[in-house]
Amino acid sequence: MKRFAVAVLLALLPLVGVVPAASAGSTDWCEEDPIVVIQTPGGNLVPLYNTMGVVGLENAAYLALATVSYTAQPANGGKSTLVKLDVTIPNGLLGSSFPTRTKISTGPLGTLDVLAGTTGSSGKAMKVQFTLDVP
Image (cartoon, rainbow, N blue to C red):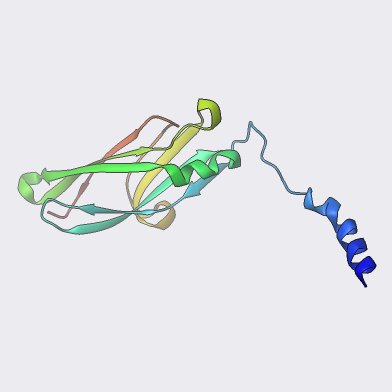
């Protein structure tokens, strides 16, 4: 029985290496869609989706290391809130840079109302600005 199990494992071993790999020049986008909760000056909490993307599967892990910061200040005489949000996705190994993007929306994966969006480069803050109709 042990010989049979070893034979099966040896027969399946070459299949372990048959995994599609992303090429260094890949133009496919990998995205992550965490929720960012904005606290307005009036104390209201507004959950928004931050759809962040990087070019290339090899850069997807850097999405988990992204930093998001924001400021919120009264606008329209205190009837709404102006939000300035920065998203920074770190550079790759040895400081390599790659294209990035971000989209802020009220629905998952950039759906419903898209409030802001921009493209950028890893290691540099992507800056977006939008107004919420909440004091």
